[in-house]
Amino acid sequence: MSVLVTGGAGYIGSHAAIALHDSGRRVVLLDDLSNASAAAVDAVRVLTSSDIPFVEGDAADVGLVDDAMGRFGVDEVVHFAASKSVAESVNEPLAYFRNNLGSLLGVLAAMEARGIKRLVFSSSCTVYGEPEVVPVTEASPVAAVNPYGVTKLQGEQLLDVIASAGGLDVMLLRYFNPIGAHLTGSIGEDPTGTPTNLVPLLMEVAVGRRDRLQVFGGDYDTPDGSAVRDYLHVVDLAEAHVAALEALASRPGATAVNLGTGRGYSVLEVIGMAEEVMGRSIAYEIVGRRPGDAERIWADPSFASEVLGWTAQRGLREMIQDHWRWCEAHPMGFETV
Image 1 (cartoon, rainbow, N blue to C red):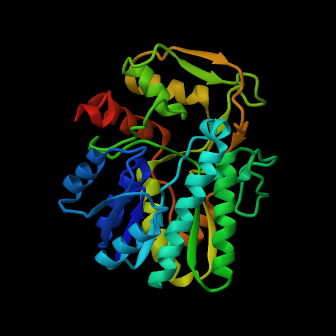
Image 2 (cartoon, rainbow, N blue to C red):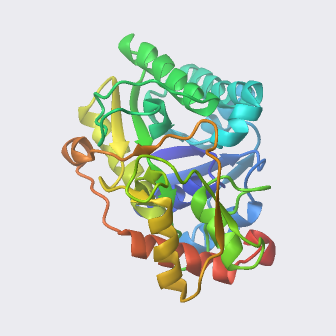
């Protein structure tokens, strides 16, 4: 099988590329490098000992995607290409709709032209909004509360319509909160500009790139007042994409699957674990809540086990250790390579 990975130079895409290659697939990467580095492609090639093809360009460009599919004999697609910051989406909603839905439409048009029907879609737990009951299952109400989440929910709805008409077999993977890095420390999260997720910000404090971490909200109805999330090792997440592609053979149509550990950790618990792993304190201050953030959310991962035969294997300590290994070796991201 030959698989096109859009957003393949990004954090999750690059880790998934390695897992897909290790599964015996021929991997083709496509990325416009707007929030990624070409150095990630080089690192993936080294880690796989393979000259994996890379196409630089926008997934919304139907002609570009169609050409890549034809040149490399693509049979299936894993679609990551999207902007992914909740906070940024609140400030720039139009840009998020244009990029996230535009890239999906571009990929779908090229797939239709080529007769390709197998797709894994990078969705998000943000489609659940602020759930009243946790853990959330795939049957929990969807009610996205920020523009990023709305783009993911609308993407799912579009894919469900196409799948219902028989035009697509698709896994809608609802990620919880990926952190960690490849065991070698050769690739990891390297956001462009100011990161908005907890662990990249925490790591910037640890390597001296910022003075302190802001904890958004200390008055939530949680044990320590800080927001609670389900954190998932990016390598576990990458392996889930292999399982999802393989499960499509017996799951026609559209299937939504939660990818998480089933355990929630508060922001302050994550900071505490990081301090244990690093053997140093992390300066932080509690500030006001951030628009669009949910109070607490974690997954019921039992459906993923049933449908994909997949469960997360790595705990929070290993996630932080691996993320720190990457950041300690690359304090300025791929710029230090």
